[in-house]
Each structure stands twice: as structure tokens, then as C-alpha cells.
Figure 1 (cartoon, one colour):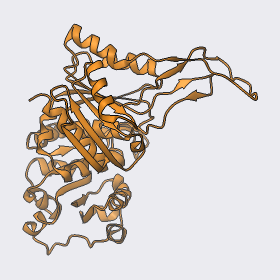
Figure 2 (cartoon, one colour; figure 1 turned 90 degrees about the vertical axis):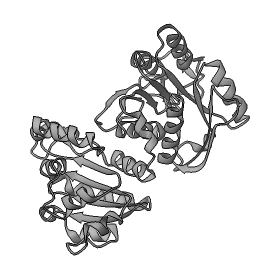
Figure 3 (cartoon, rainbow, N blue to C red; figure 1 turned 135 degrees about the vertical axis):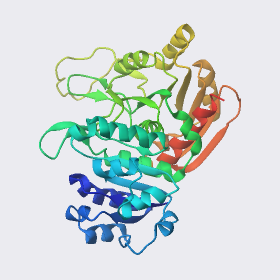
Length: 387
């Protein structure tokens, strides 16, 4: 994987250094390109050292640069550079490269919210998207001047996910555009008292990755997660317990195209939750009762209203994986189920099997793929459900 990383003159340019470091850890080769004004915000030496490549020079032709990377990224992208890109102005090395580059292009805006919300900037963003340019962010948060608003550069993990997915370059994911997708992520927690809880080891990484990639390709995304995530440019709801998750899911799936239930929902909850901290003793027994099956509730809702149109569940087993997955697929009236072993939890590489209601056997098997590669594969199979 190789990218050209353009950095423009935003105060957020310092984040590009951490972005470079993180991408290099994923073995993504980076060819950096700084605008002249960006050099006032980040040191060329720092960029070259972290990227392990020299800055793209004025001597290199735009034809050469088109063949240099799989993806062109501009992060951060100022209002000025964004406007030039939208209107075909090529008056420096970065904008000339943008206009000539034939592969996927990703812009990551960062600016004051008054500039971002200006109708001219919004028009430029619309124009760029119509030309197939990918745009991530900005998000709500603290701005450089002390104000709060929608102009903060998107979180680095989200940018990294988007870059990696574009390097994989699955054109079929463009079919996600305008689809309303609800994704759940993380492991739910069930209270014991007001300070303790029981939970599971789910990190929520895969669900968050699925949500980020769906958003990148134009889906209307609602992520319901147990994790305290950074602000995103799509709807994000936090739900800690299985009860909260159920309430949020049943409300969110109305008129949705798909529910991707990647969250690990607790199988049991505590029968009698104490409202104050339980004093420590040598032994304590908990009275556990089963939680409600969210997917079965969704199946009932789907029969009544026809929504969500597609329901995707997940299965985690260490024994009889295929038999268990197909059994849950039928019992919960799912359109698709993703089966994986427990050692996938928290792992940087995943092995999964996908089963659909149209087939009795595995329609897809992925071995030792990154979290992003796994998420892309799952979304490709979701798209196939509509064909």
C-alpha cells in the first residue's frame, strides 16, 4: 500500500506527523507533499524522518506522481485548497497533483466552523463528492482559537481506516451510497452495584471500522456503541447495557436498509442491582438472569414493518462454529451471519466465515485479514444481499 500525503497550511497540520507514524506502523508507504505555507506549521525534516521518504519536489512531474501512490490524501485540507480542488485550479505542486491523479482521492478538511459552514465551502464539498472525491470530516469539537464548532479534523483512527480501505479499493462499496445503515459495536456492561459491572472482552474495533467505511462510501450511518468514541461526522449513540442497546436499536432501525449487529451483547444481567456499593466480603453470589435477544426482537419488528430490510448478526464460538452459525441464522431470521472464533477478540488479524439465508454453506471465508480488510469483506457481502 502506498499513498501520496498532502499537507496544507492548517493549525491541524501537526496531526499529520502522528498520522504518518501510525500509517507506517501498518506498512503503508508514504510520499509526503507539503504546500509552501504548510512548512510554517510542520518541519519538512520531521515529515521526511517519520515517512522515511523525501518530500516530493518541484522537479517531479505530475505524470510521475500519478504512478507513485495508490491513493492521494490531503490531511489536513484547508478551505483554500478545498476550493482550488473543487474548481480545477492547479497553481502549485499539490493542486496540480490532485488534478492529474487518477486513483482514489481523500480530503480531510480542517478549518474554523464559520469557514466550513459557509455556503460557498458547502457548495465546493458537494461538487467534489459529485466528482467521486472522498471527504471525511470535519467533526464537532474544540477549535484552535478556543471556540467550539464543526471544523475539527476527523479523528486519526477514522482517517487511517478510510485510507486503508481506499488502498484496498473495492469499487463495489460505492453501492453503499445513501443506504441507511445501523451498526452496533462493543461489549455491553451489566451493573452489579453503582460502581461495579460484568462485561465481556469485545473492543468494538470491527463495528467502528464497519461504520467508518460505510460512511466513507456515502452511507447514512448510525453507530450505536458501548465505547466512548471521539466525535464523528455521522450519528453516534452510546448505549452501555443490553437494555439500553435494545431500546436504541429498535428505535434506530425504523426505515433503515440494514442492521449490522457487531456488538457483543451480554447473555446475562444481574437480577437485583444494588443502588449503593456492596461491601467487600469473602464470598458473594450473583443472581443472573438471561438478557433479551435483540435480534429476535428486530425479527418481529421486521415482519411488522418491513424494516430493517437486511439484518446481519454475528456469532462467536469455539466449537461447532459452522453448525452454530447456521442454527442462529435460521432461529433469528437473519439475512446474514458472520461467524468467528473467540481468539478474534482484540486481535489485529481476523478469520471469519460468512453465511447467508440464501445458502446452506459458507459463502465467504477470510483468513488472517486486518480489521479493515475484514470490515470491507463483510460490507461486500452485505451489498450482495441486495442483488
